[in-house]
Length: 238
Ligand SMILES: *C/C=C(C)/C=C/C=C(C)/C=C/C1=C(C)CCCC1(C)C
Image 1 (cartoon, helix red, strand yellow):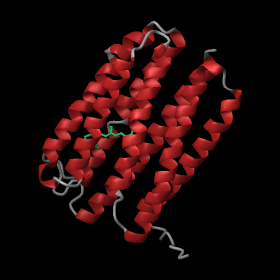
Image 2 (tube, helix red, strand yellow):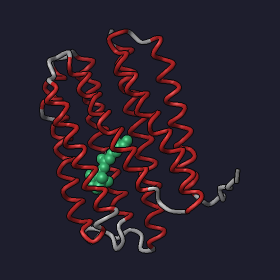
Image 3 (spheres, rainbow, N blue to C red):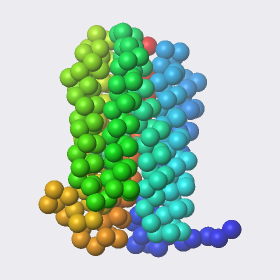
């Protein structure tokens, strides 16, 4: 068993470490609170815990991978997102189901999130040369999700699901609009040469480090924050 030391100026490894701890702690919290959660909200809170738990396991791997290779764990990152973002779509479906959300809404959200992530993966890995193109396609799918949540079916159903659900959905919509927008920023930071004429960091190694830090902060905000909104909804409405 080798013990790799995190250098005190290694902010990338540090955020992977803190990310692992935060996701683990959040999972324990959501899972233990299930016992105090009314039947009606139990599945939603369980899904919050699954999101942070899946992330905790991936962060554990990403932390080790980054510490031993110094590289960006892009593959594990996207495997994590491919599992957790659709689960966030499930959260939107579950809270609007009472107001009549159909399964087709869930599939629309999941399909858009898969397009967003698969195209982002192409742009970050196998087709680096066309990262602008892949980024734009991914951004389109992202805006479609934001549209559904702000003005589309999710928004209108949440209005008829009672004031608490409407309020929680509005907060989650802000997470999608602002919290999720941090990811394309990480993508731009990490793309060699920058994107759209924006080049924030010119050294390639520094660019990929900046990208990882931005993604790690975004994950903590979005996964734990999102779960806490669902959790507080489960406390405010019974
Ligand atoms: C828990 C993980 C979450 C909420 C991940 C969300 C990821 C995104 C919203 C990623 C979006 C991207 C774009 C909109 C364009 C550039 C490529 C991506 C995949 C970084």
